[in-house]
Length: 88
Image 1: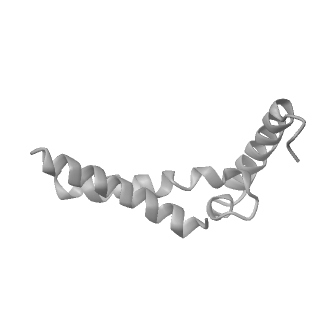
Image 2: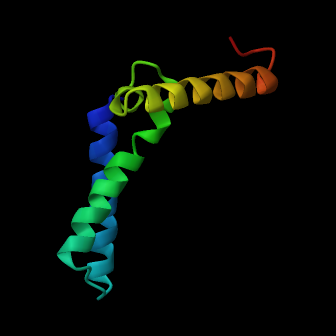
């Protein structure tokens, strides 16, 4: 899945929460829907932090690239520590 698809799914998830709230009789103001969708769209990029070519790793220059490298090393260490004999 690429960055735009992650962002779209995050925004759609928030809009779904807004629709559920409206169905329950608690309508969100439109600024809350817009800002929430933007925040969720950005947060949905987080699963790609361990890929050096991901959208989020290039988003904020050296800051996000460094964060990406740290997350990559951490995820590899967890993988090595938890892999079983059948894992590649």
